Length: 145
Image (cartoon, rainbow, N blue to C red; front, side, top):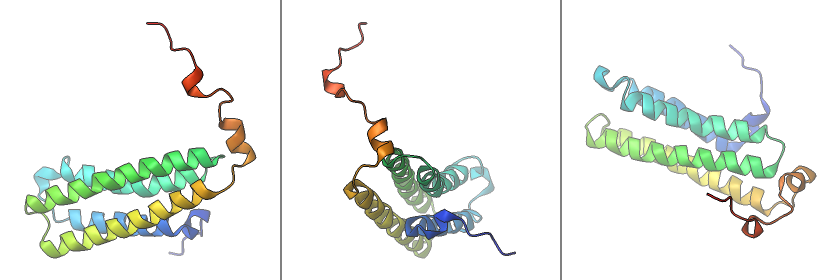
């Protein structure tokens, strides 16, 4: 089946995140059945979240929103790190599988970080200016309790 090309396919960080998701799904197929609703599900959801937040952020109308979603993506990537480690410590992943998953996760993380750095260096757009409050948050009066 030939898939339709999507704009996010051009984002290298997304491509690596997608490869991570596919790897996670393949690796978790071998996890014990009693983990189906535990670490298997958690690791799969975290992997999908990495790439889904890259795509969702890309669709937003401002750089600030895009960066916010990339930050969420990075959090999910860190969640993958600890879940991969736990899976290895529990004996669900071999050392070779761990190295493969961790290498893919690090590659994805590096590219995600580079994407965020690049976006931060860009000049603000009209949408960014419109979404930035004119009054600094530090000058606002706190809400009385």
